[in-house]
Length: 151
Image 1 (cartoon, rainbow, N blue to C red):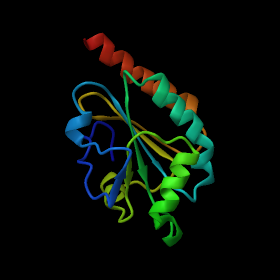
Image 2: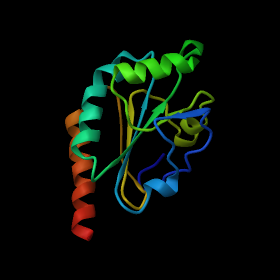
Image 3: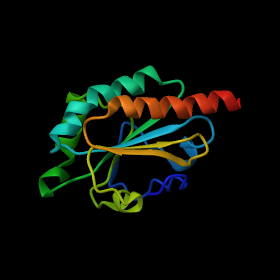
Image 4: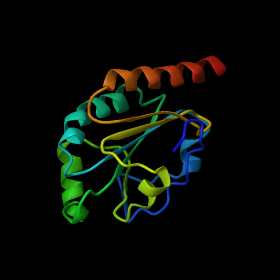
C-alpha cells in the first residue's frame, strides 16, 4: 500500500477472534492501527507488549486490529493462534488471514508490520520489523493530534 491510499475492506478472514470489524466500523471517528503478526514470529511476540500498551493507552482515541498472517503451514492451526493470542494478551479483534487475502490486498511482506490510518481511512504510516516502536508512537500521536485539532 502507498501512503494516502484508502483502507481496504477487511475481507477474506477464515475467522475473526475477539469480535469482527469492518472498514465502516473503523472509519469516521478515530484513527486505526492495523498490525500484522504471526504465531511463528519471535519479533512479533517481543513487540506485542508495546502494541498492547498502545491499545490500552489510546483505547478511547485509536482503533486497533490485529491480522494473523501465516508464514508456513504450521501457522494455520486456529487453536495455536487462539492460544498464542491469549498468552500475549491480544484482546483486540484478530483477522485470521490464513488464505493471505488481506495480506495480498495490503501488499504486505512482513511481520510484524504496522499500518496507521487516519480517521478518514487514509494510510498515513507504514512500518515493518520489531524495532522502531518509538517512531510508531510518534506517527500515531501525529495522526491523533491532527484528529483532535480538526474537531
